Image (cartoon, rainbow, N blue to C red):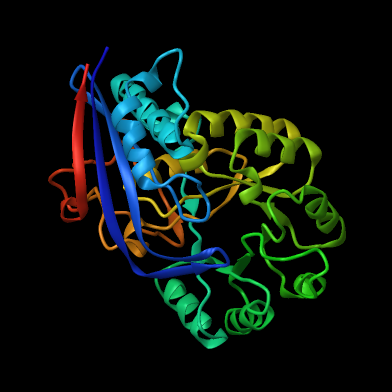
Length: 351
């Protein structure tokens, strides 16, 4: 029986602001939830992201503090999506730890390395974008995803392509284009790995039309932030690649969607929300599933100034490996670890 639930909020700066078509983020406010049963604790992470999730971190804190224990019952209350995802993550981690197996094995993955991908935000100029990509390449990255928007697209991508002709490059528009924008007529000349969310999230017909006319694979992300949205995208064939975020959907839902994707023959990308080692480990475990060909995952400390775990995430030839220990495989010490300086508040709720 679950005995207690620990909730801890952190405010962690980014090394440098990350700018997209939806705005600029300079720090991350996340909430960890630990579910304790018979002395074993499973961990999940709620990471609401401005412009992506409707809830605030305060909404998530209140939901997990006041409703966290009830969320594990048969009649779970309605709560913010990232709070529900965090509870789901924690329960899966707890079950894996109690069973003495890795989370990767529990979620049907394999102990294989996963190709990392560094997201590069909207920079001031094409030259600055090339510099940021160069830093990632020097650190061992083999694939980058460059944020774009109308007016800040072709010259930026072409500059990167000219400097690094053999690098795998994708572009993420965060839904900022319209179907008739000129950039969409020339994107095929850039040999991109994929073009992510070019149109508004609800414009599925437009994405389907683009898929028919572009050689560049079309990836949906903001359109697939719910299980229902992901299922529709798969069944209607509106994209070549579907992005799934465990931080929004929960690991259980992503696992079910991966099984559906296998039947639909759809390629999957596993994405993150700029999380700590907790969210990163959950995402990486799912990214080892066979259908997953893309990620936007890098070691947490590449982006964040601190972490809640001392786990040494490292790239080897551009790849990340999932931890092999029980559960997440990473040590989490939210009140006394390396991230303690960023702790905002913590509370334990007991039955």
